[in-house]
Length: 387
Length: 138
Image (tube, each protein chain N blue to C red):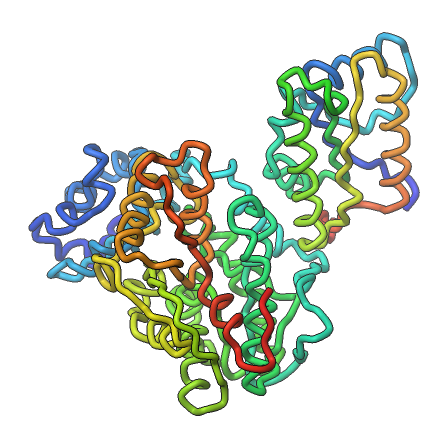
C-alpha cells in the first residue's frame, strides 16, 4: 500500500483515539493556532496524504516529544513527522532553515570524500589514540562553534575539554578525522538520503578502530546513534554512552576527582537527552558531583520546556517565546548558569540572550547558558584546565 | 592537470564590485572567463551558506567582492562581510576545503582593472591548487 499507510502503521498512528492530550500539551499548538498534532494524525488516518504533504506546518513541529511522552496510546508522533517530512520535501514542500541552511550543507559536506581537518582542536597536551576501546564521537560541535562564534563560542572548547576529562581519569580516547556528522539535522529536515550516507561512513570508521564503547558529549548524536542508527543496523557492535553516564561512572569508581565548588546552577533537559533517551538523573548527579548547588526550574525532566528549534528548521516567533519562557524560569531560580548537554540548545538560548531585540523581561539577567562538559572540565582536580 | 579550468562563483556587491566588473568589461580588459558572477546588494548580504553551497555544488573557488572598508553604501555591511568570510574560512579548513579557495577583495566601481587582475590571479592560483576536493571521483 501507499508509503503513508506504512508510516502510519509503523508509528502507531492508527492507535490514536483523538483524546487531544498531545495538542493540549504541545508548546507549538499553544501559540500557533494552525498547528495541532492531533489534527495531523487524524488527517493521516483519513488518508489525506496530499494535504499533509503540502501543509507548511509539517515543519512547525519542534519534535520535542512532549506529545509522545504523554500519549496514552504511545503514538510515535515525532517519528511520524520525521518520516512525513521526507515525503513533503520530495513533493516540493520545503522547510525554512536558519542561516539559509548552512548547518545542513556543512553536515552534508563532511561526507563528500575529502580529507577533513576535523581534529583542528587537538592540542599537544591531549592524549588520544588511533585504535582502542573508547571512541569519542565529537560530532559537529567544533564546526558549530565556528559557525556560531558570535553566540556560542564556548562550543569550540567542548571536544578538547571532553578529552581532558577522559585523560584525567586515565582514559585515552580514540578520535578520528575520518568521522563525519551524525546526520541528525538532515534526518529531521527530510533528507534521509544524505543521512544514510553519513551513517554508513560513521559506522565504518568506528568499526575500523575496534572501539567497544562510543562516547557522546552531544545529546543529538547520542540519540541518533542509539535510536536511528540502530533502526537501520540493529546491533551496532559497540556500546553507545552519553558523557554524563560515562563520566559519572568514573566519578563513582573513584577514577576521577572533581573539585568541590559551590556555584549555584540549574540544569536544562534537552529534548534529545531527556524525553527521547530518558537520561534525566546522570547529568544532574554529575553536576552535583562537582560540588555545585543544583536548583531545579519549575518545569523539569519530562516536562522541561524545549529550546524552541529543532534541526535549524522553522525558527520564528513561537521559538523565541519558548526560549523566553525557559530563560524566565531559569531567572526565577537565581542560578548563575543554566547547564545543558546539547550544543543546539546552547546556540538557541544564547541567540536570544545576545540578540539586539532581546525582550525587556530579560533585562538585567545575569545568567549564562553553558555546556555541561565544559563546566565539568573546569572543575577537574589536578590535570584539568579551563578553556 | 592540463586543461583544468576552474569554476569560480563571484559574489559582487551591487554598488562597487559589480560596477567594477562591468567597467572591466566595458573597458575590454582581458581576464579568464572562469567566474559566474552573482550580484548581491551588499557584501554584508553574504551568508556562510552561500559559500558552502557553492563548494558543495562543485565550485573550485569563491570570490567575495565589496566596497572598500569605510565606503560601504550601507555604512558597515562590508565590515560584516569581513567577519563572516573569516569565520567561513576557518570552517572550510576544518571541512577539508583549503580556505585559500575563498577570497575576499575590495573592488570599487572605478577599479575595473583591479577586478580583471583579481580574476587573473585567482584563476592562476586555483589552477595551481587543482580541482576542489569536493569534486570527488569526477
